Image (cartoon, rainbow, N blue to C red; front, side, top):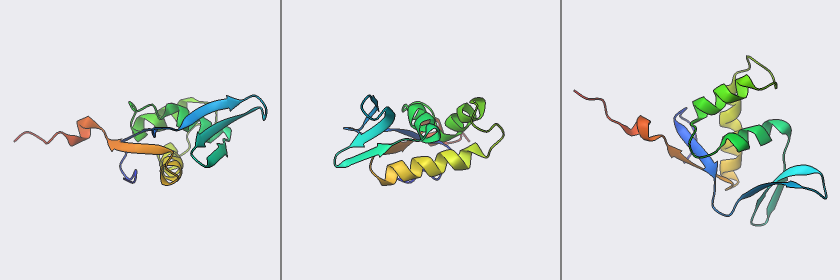
Length: 104
């Protein structure tokens, strides 16, 4: 799945670990045969990918942080999620509310 909709809900994929590495003194996301040292922006996005918040909610959360208020956060968040999903580190599902069909 590709997070093209603001209703996608990302979470860390099974077997993926996000942790602070004491030796390198940096935040790391670790997957089988992959280790990525995270910049502060990517770290905050990955921390927000808790399996409960959709991309829109994560973008609103990012706007509340001190990175760059007023930035086009939905685009930034979608790009970061797309990158880590492509590497197999995130998985996305459609929010259950988005699945509900309108009543007629």
